[in-house]
Image (cartoon, rainbow, N blue to C red):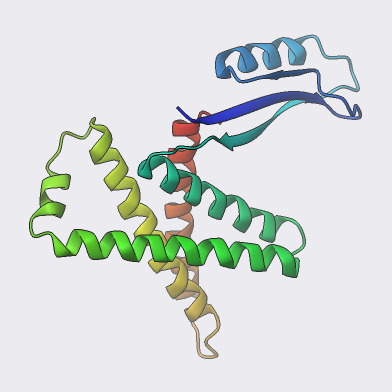
Length: 184
């Protein structure tokens, strides 16, 4: 797979990493060993860095685009809501929305394609990729509706909470799929 994940094992208070590897299983085992042998003031953790090497398939390109959108949204909300983080996030979100619109237009232009994709065995790659696309597409719709409703002056708090819960459920599903696929 041209998408690689670099696992870096670090310790709080130390600048240099303890280990770098591209092997998920080794990184988990090494991190567990370091945590087991840690001194009183040490705390070990693992960071990940996702790298994509061309050429990527369309499915991999889409996965990386969704990963980038989720990463940028989290960075914006977690790091003080800086203007440059917002601009970067909005640019990637726009790119994702255009991708979704193109894909939906293609699917709608081919009669029976959606039914064919939904009738595939659930363990096939094509089915999983299509199901992921549908979840992301619905998440973007719910995301836009939530933020549009949130700006209304006559909004109702229970409705806003329900919309936020729905949005967060989609985000959890997307993050879980990305985590499982990329082995983060």
